[in-house]
Every structure is written in structure tokens, then in C-alpha cells.
Image (cartoon, rainbow, N blue to C red):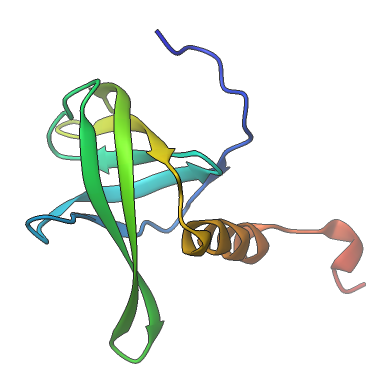
Length: 119
């Protein structure tokens, strides 16, 4: 079982919705991301050791979205501290360039560099 994280993850205080790419139905929210994985927060547990076709819909302009299609394997799934919610960890297979760009944008947006703060 996968127990140690080797890649730094970035928590997302503001959630982005994740969709089933086949049905286009929402399945949860992005909890955190790394270069090769993500955590999904959902109302149902996910099946472990199963590949999922996921779609992230990123707001870019007034009502417009950029879609990022991902294939990911669920490595674990357990109940969240919040009742009726589940956290599930996914390994993303061959992440597209747009996924890396999303991670960079999120890191830049949510990071704070004290040296850059106004005095």
C-alpha cells in the first residue's frame, strides 16, 4: 500500500470541481495537487485500483472554461473528517502540459513570499 509521499503537495483552500469525463457529471472537488497526482473530495468513496477518466473545468473568462482531461488511478479512499465526505488519492497517468500549467498557476496564486511583501 502507498504510504509515503515523495512529491510536495499543495493544499487548495478554494476547491475546483472534478467531472467524470465520460458522463460529464461532477464527482467531487480537487483537494490538493502534485505533479503526478491529486486528491479528490467527494460524497461517495471511490473504488481503489481502478482507472478513472477525469475532467477538470478551469474558469478562464466570463463563463468560459478550459478543460483538462486526465486518466488517473485511485490509490486509496477513506472517510473525510467532515461527515458524508470522502478523500481519495489518485495517481495521474501521463499528465498533459495543461495540468502542469494549472499546478504552476495554483502554486503561484496561493503562495506567499515574505520577501515580496510590502513594508
